[in-house]
Image 1 (cartoon, helix red, strand yellow):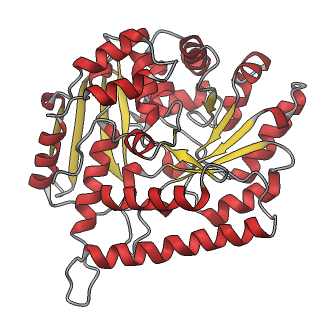
Image 2 (cartoon, one colour):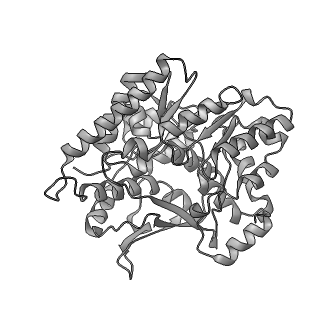
Image 3 (spheres, helix red, strand yellow):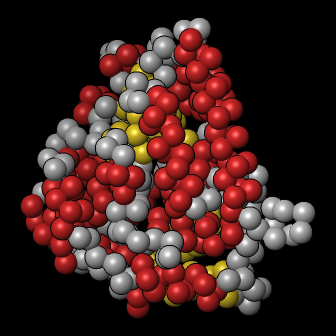
Length: 399
């Protein structure tokens, strides 16, 4: 059985961004690059290539198209495009570099390549997992991983249940954001079934994974990711205006829907300079994905206060390397000041007794020119062109 068997087995924000790209930039070309932050090795090139071959054979079926058409913000032309859509194998090259590390280059039209990222990362993560020893004999046993994962998941459930009973987490909400680094598709399905059964919708509010949102009749969650803002660095506006152009184009596309703004593409300080009264009223809230979350939330609340906006009418969404303990701590610190939600990734979908790989696929070029992700955590920045990286930091006054 192949790892990916549906094009819906991806994050919701890839589809929301795909529609915006189709409408705004249908002819723009981009390039993406793979990186593993914790230096894991992936010598199973042939296996990964075969899985990607299968991925590129998939199409959205009628039932999946009907499901997507139920979302009012997906327009008729985008739905028609998805009926014809198929990932093109010629746009992705998977090989081994000179050091023996996994090398992935994705290059082609933005609209034709945007849906590669999440399923390809899920393929790499699951391939890696099944080759990791977790028995005394040095082999891998899926049953052992599922047993460990189930035990760890029940500890999380018990932790939250105790806090619920004692009234310590009023209005606490979390979602699954772990598709790209999950242990396996099967385990992902199992744990979502368990979480929905235990917490319904009052605590566990949904998943970023569209396939499982459909399967378990829960909410698919997501708006934009870094590539939307990165791309705008090379799409016509001055560098200094690229962030505001990305936010404005998003607002024009979705007209009040999907109103969570990503806040760290060039650092939070620079984001707040652009996030003026217009955008602060227009967007429902902001997403934290790098830097100290406490400092970030304090500054966000202060920013809303300064603009005369009640922070309790807005959302702070946290998604950076969270576990439930950290999420609860943040919730207890700020829940009386601002609405909050938490996206938990690897700690839910790959907590099975193995050390998961920390893998990403990020845009490095748009329109034939370099783009950068600077962020508030130095180790999460990404850019192939050091001169462009330095210039962008200068433009946005980043020390």
